[in-house]
Amino acid sequence: MPAISSKTRTTILRIIALVAVVAISVYIFSIRDRAEELAVYGYPGIFLLAFLSYATVFLPAPGVAVIFTMGAVFNPLAVALVAGAGAALGEVVGYMAGFSTQVVTERTAIYQRLVEWMKRNGPVTIFLLSAIPNPFFDLAGVAAGALRTPVPHFLFWCWLGETVKMIFFAYGGAVLLK
Image 1: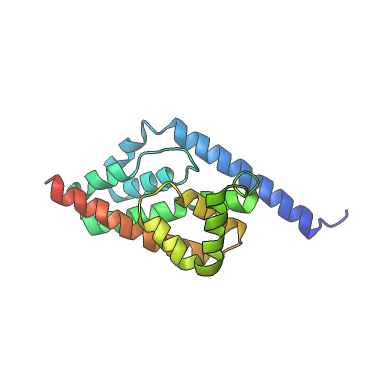
Image 2: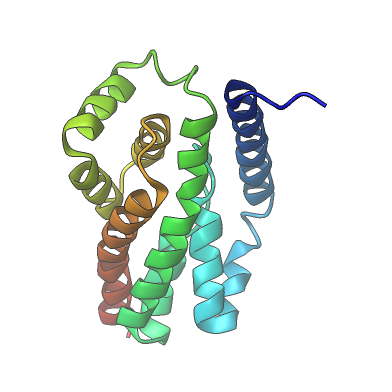
């Protein structure tokens, strides 16, 4: 039996990653109305909700509203840390989309700008775009995957940024809802 070439293996991995991204996004989008129910399971539910909310690529899912609310119910710092970890792991789906293909996004001006920022200041770009609520972080994850940013580096900087963002939402809920 002939050995599979490196190029063929990479192509197979890209196809698997693309199928996984589409399947995960469609599934999470389909359960978005029931996702808030996970918060009743405490910190594990918050982690899972954050993961599911951030695992969608370019499709809206609930997330920060529940983090805001849970900040008033649980310890806001713990909520932010757990939600930040779940969100960072969920963002790996966007990273996988970038690894699998960049055909759709590579022609857009904003994507090209993000790629240039990632090439010059990858960690800072990942941190800043994940720390502020914005619609462009999925593109940053795609760019990180396309540029083959090491997954541990992507996860670390994404976790840091997501945790900073979640701190604001969790403490905002703790202050405004009590």
